[in-house]
Image (tube, rainbow, N blue to C red; front, side, top):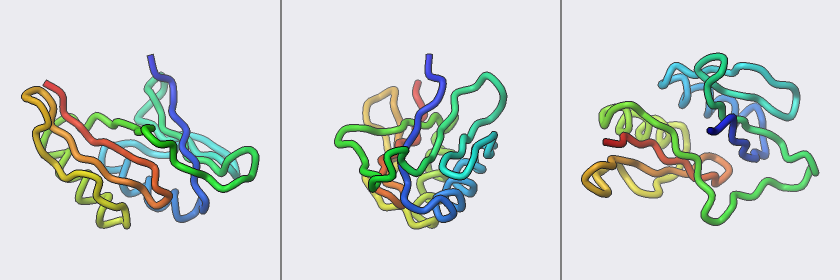
Length: 122
């Protein structure tokens, strides 16, 4: 159902270093891109996350209520991704833990304030 999600960044080099290291923990890598946009994924036909300098060249702003949820596969990976994001300069929005009996998640903001959730469902 989801092809890709795009989030705005202000410094591509800094953002690529953050997402290369963070998403590399899930086996994801840059799939393709150009100067103002880079797409990350785990393989052809899989959902992707793209980071970009906004097309209108205005400052990127995170949307209120917008969030990218990234399946981590296990509670251990949720913990690992959360710690990695913080290590890379992300900020805490809610540490790892059980939110409801079938959902374990952690929340961070990236270097530009975009909200990310790492989760294990079920």
